[in-house]
Length: 137
Image (cartoon, one colour):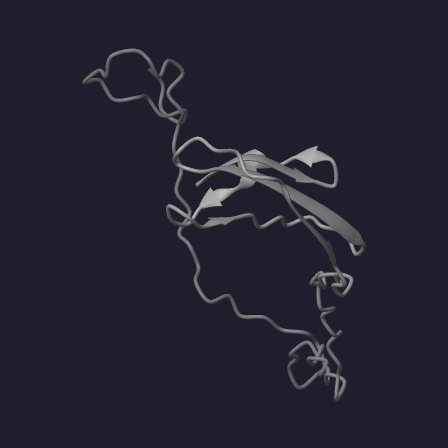
């Protein structure tokens, strides 16, 4: 048997029929509304005989679809403070001797070094010493 015509509520749906076997066909619509529908099917047998249409009237009474919940961001709670921090102020006293005069002792005393800058640093080094300002040339 071959389905040659399939009409649902006046619309051609032959392309949506599926052969389950040589004599069994199926049609599974997915977008039917909650109302009464009419399905008309015409088939032809292996000898080429066209059969009278088979008409079925049926009703759909399905529950309305429910909205799919949309996830939302969960708010992050603000941190709470159980106690306030303690602040200690460092001493501002300046060390002094017995008379009350401030004293300071340097940790390291650097030696003083005298030098004379080369007036022409790009010139080649010479073997002659640089004269000191105290001695005449």
